[in-house]
Image (cartoon, rainbow, N blue to C red; front, top):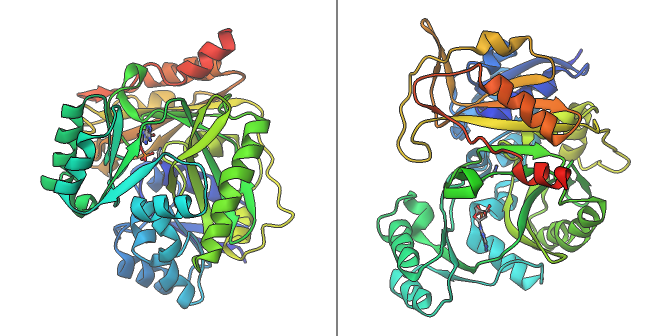
Length: 428
Ligand code: AMP
Ligand code: GLY
């Protein structure tokens, strides 16, 4: 008998996970809650919201699943893993205590400082007056972060003091990101190039995935406000083998050991957002889950079966596991609703999905989509992750945009420069 797997979530990351998990010979069936229109073509979807911890637990028990894979941060921070483990269900995803690495930037920054793990200098505030006083004497640029969860949007990189003060007001006083802004972290600005290094962690051991690079800003050339991520590719040339090894030794392993020492052993995927500058590596952020959209290109390159890796992570037995990667480059372009990360429309009919279905080397991962009688319509800010696999970055970029150009809906938007840093490196 094969395994019955429940995947929690309904975004592009979860579509990629479901696609990869369903391809495993170990798996009999995949249930997804809540899923989306693309996932529905590959697995059974059940309408339980990702953050509905009680609902997800009830679903896992009712359907007697063998493994639960938790995609987004909200159910992790809400303690879903703990509840599943308490009922004896294998779960891929850290405990609530370990997910604090993502759920509380104040906790994370304090941990890194105490264990001397390289990161930006910082101060934490719960009082807006004190935070403002600190900003008035901070050099700019300066970075202001809502401590809690804010869907990748609660970070303001301010280049002037006026912008910094306005940003603080939005986070702490206007509460643009809700309770996430009750506490803020004010950080030194770090120059450099960013990369994402994700690793499977079984409590002790760290097994890195292929490196990736994300594009967080909404505008071309990395301008404009931050989003959840507008595109990503793997491998990231900036994260060569030597830097990856150093990132493991200097950042990931010390963090995993620190979490164990703190009585919060980490089991799941640990996502390190890194800043690389003049040979130094520092942590910008940790996420307690797979990155979105990094997962789409990373999994497109993964040759190994993902399911034994998820099980080994869940059961503390990563020793001896290896991952086989496709040498080629995968690149994902996110198509979003116009207006995102601000207000945007939903319910626009998406045209052209059939036209790209047969394209070799292309996979369209759905994020905010919904199947209706009128066809597939938009249902979120990030709508699709059009992902291509090819011999080099330029070719993957060309192929991804060739597919993007066949898809449209009223008000659709995408950055046209995903992968530009790596394409520039390739040309040199
Ligand atoms: P975070 O969610 O903490 O990774 O922040 C989102 C984005 O803001 C990062 O991907 C960076 O582009 C930027 N950022 C965050 N912290 C810093 C920092 N200390 N220095 C420079 N840029 C930063
Ligand atoms: N792409 C950034 C994230 O998943 O947080």
